[in-house]
Image (cartoon, rainbow, N blue to C red; front, side, top):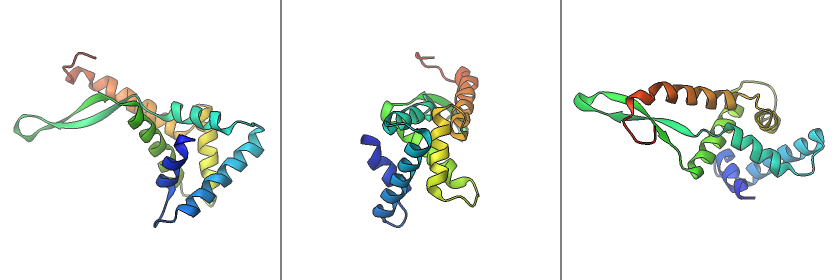
Length: 141
């Protein structure tokens, strides 16, 4: 699976890759047990696709050191990176007593069902880029 190494590297703390692997495999086991699905990869891919944005707002300096935000289309590799970033940041930012692997499990399952915070963050980002598109004088808009 191509996403495994990316997920390991995003979860990793203080250079402990083994602990990030253990957390990820615990998450996969819990998902497989609770969802009764043989193919977890499809669930993870679906969750990543639904939480990865197509556009991104980038701040660009204009005349007299004024900065404005312009929407830019993302490359597919960076879309996956932003989707992972949204999912994992929402897992780490919620202050609960649940362990990290349970939070990651809930976030992945909910994002595949289109109910998670990462999906709402993606929708908000798309709305903002749609509002800012009048500032962009590019062909693709």
